[in-house]
Length: 149
Figure 1: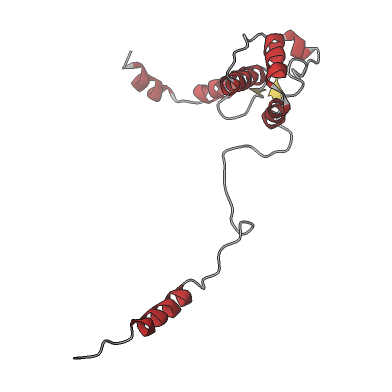
Figure 2 (figure 1 turned 180 degrees about the vertical axis):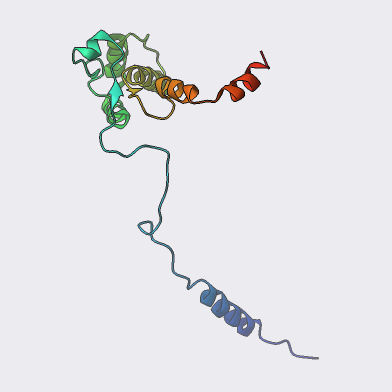
C-alpha cells in the first residue's frame, strides 16, 4: 500500500504565499482626497429675503442655530418629553415615535434654514445671474428656441 504524502507541508507553503500577497501597505485616510460641489470661500454670502432679515434677523431665534449638525446633536441630547415640548414650541404636533418626530423636526429645521439662505447674486443657480446670461444669447439662437412654442 502506498503511503500518503503529508498534507500539512502543502498547507504551510500555501499560507506563506498568501501572507506574502497581503504585505501590501494599506492607504492612510490622510493621503486620500475627496471632492464635492460646495463653494469654499470661507463665509457664504446670502441675500436677505424678508424685511426681518434686512433689519438684522439671522434666523437663529426659533431653533437657536442655523447649523444642522449642531441642531441634531441638541436633539440627541433631549429626552422624549423634551422633544415633545420643543415640537409644540416650534409648531409641530408631537408624536410618540421618537425617530419619526426627530425626522419631522429636522425636516422643518431644514425648511426654516433654507428660507434664510437664498444665495447671493452671481452664485450658480441664482435666477438673477441666469437672467444676465439669457441677455447674452444671440438673436438667431432665440429664433431657433422660439420655434418650439
